[in-house]
Length: 316
Ligand SMILES: [Zn+2]
Image (cartoon, rainbow, N blue to C red):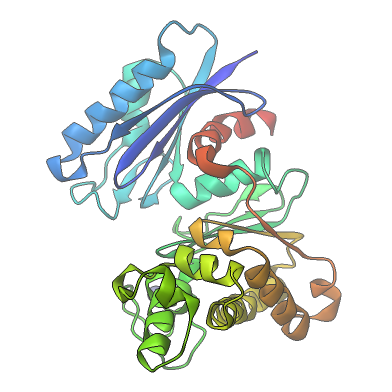
């Protein structure tokens, strides 16, 4: 069976592995990204990781790379958050020349979308919206069986869809973007402010009064213990997401919406609230059939998804 190298470049870690056609990881390694030391260091760390995956292997058919930032169809990275000197970096060419294997480079959320499409919750579907919910809100789309990149290669910035005419300022410069309502920092902020106003909650007990320690994970723990504030918070996040997704459902008529990232682990209260809002707002004919599900690939999703960029390509 053929194998592929999958490399997930993150702000802190590089995760790399050898993956077979079925999406099973045969070996894996984690290295520090060392982004502050500049691009030469990062590229050398990536090379080390790829060499580890290739060592002793004969049937490797390519290298798939998921990277932060904006990537063009030639595998050039224009800019990447947390990697300040990554400007116009021909990542695909660099590794193709070095290893003499086909290389595919894609933006990280598009990579996860491809992984869920080939191996995960989106398997068998042709029209998929994928969102990753963590510090920010990332998005990717498969339309008619293909990753949709738009005309300037930066489509599916779902986190920056405005849901409010005014609203709080977002990092992108706009106001009222959905990311500003559902990102980890803001979810934690809702809990903190409610507790400061005197609301009793198990969230305060879990962090032993240190409100700085409140995180989406803590809110989920409190929810498991029956906390009403935690329940309200997840319902609110679901309300915002469901509202935005209703618009996307009416626009694109997807078969399935996949939600990944740390916050998706909030589970039932979040998904129930999203469902409720979609049923209320989207066209009934479209809302009736769309499935909203958690991502399936789990902790190694970055490596498997990066490998899917090569494997998915050969299956087309
Ligand atoms: Zn924004």
